[in-house]
Image 1 (tube, rainbow, N blue to C red):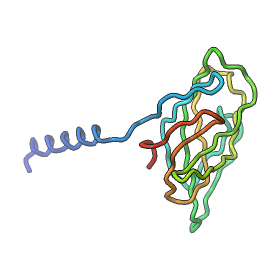
Image 2: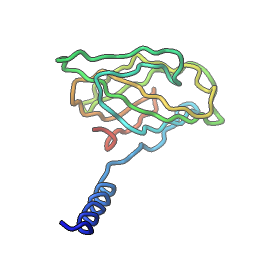
Image 3: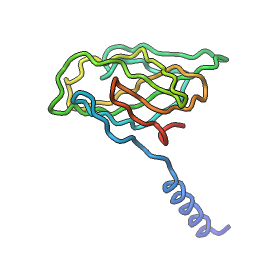
Image 4: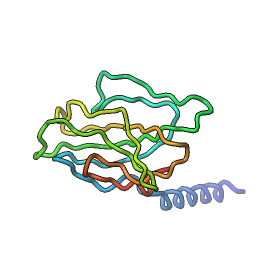
Length: 148
């Protein structure tokens, strides 16, 4: 293959790959003056379990080799809106396609001290679980198209 044909083929692959990708983030949802947008979901066997916003807590979660579980980690960008009133927030919950709920050990801490922040919440789920939604109490974010 000539140099020009190779470059044209590579450019064509990049254009097709860019145009066929899934959504890169969810629609914003608001809960008590806190706007949340899910920007990605990743699977791993070793994760950070810091609180949100991230602080001094440096606990890690590890899945042992051979365990049929994995961590589904949901990255969320938050924006503190003018109507936000500081106070306790419930822990997020992750739901699979069958409606089963998965809890996280991570909590919200000192929300409102910065105007925006990002957090990654990790949930221990069976390997390959089809994820449906991420929720903070009554605010629910559809994960369809964001999961691997």
